[in-house]
Image (cartoon, rainbow, N blue to C red; front, side, top):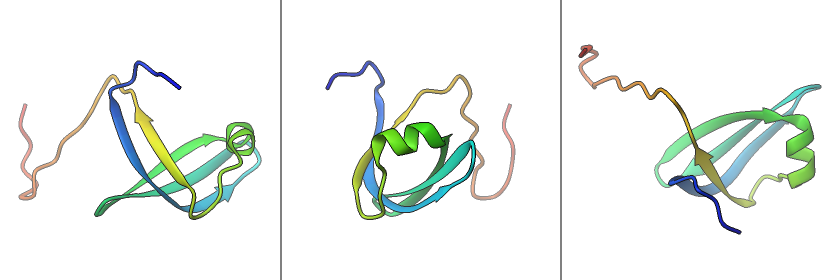
Length: 74
């Protein structure tokens, strides 16, 4: 499968919490933990399960960075 998205984070699903309209998917990506909110319909179509290898594709118009000392830079 090919995709134009360049920001790809492969990991392992650690949690799937299905709601009526949205599903929270937690992914362990190396030493980092990320959470994605996707439609429940998509989660069911993908048959997402804990322990499954998956890749997060990130496409965003804004990315915010906070430094460790909490200072902001504009």
